[in-house]
Image (tube, rainbow, N blue to C red):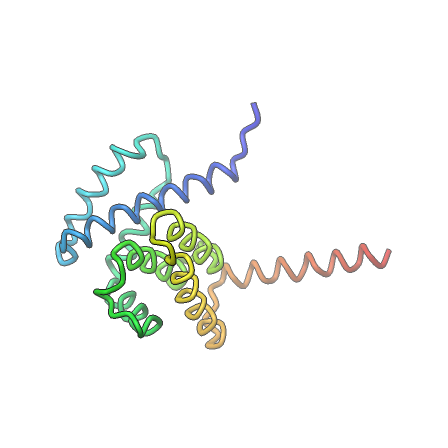
Length: 177
């Protein structure tokens, strides 16, 4: 039987993001943002109910803990990059997808920014409203552009860029031969 470990890791991470998003949604919906322990109960329930077999090596906890720890900064970034939308007027689902995306783009050392953006867009398309994907894409795209302009590039993004340059040079050399 063919078993693609890379695909399994990607699928587990995608499922982990869904689980984190669902848990953050409920945490936010119940107005329990101040109760940092409440989300642990929500996550335990959601994990048991929807993903009891998930072995994500702590990835969902990393996301939730990161969002909790940086909630103030994440909210400020959302307000800055979505000025037409007061934070309370952004749908709960979109608000929490943005929090996850911004957290992964800015703080998660092992997630490339473009992966964070793509994953957030997919979550928005699958769980948000009709225009959620475009909204999330616009906000995260603007943040990413400003990060690049400011030279705020994570090591993993530098590594990915270096790999791409190397691949392009190899392709050019193959064409010349």
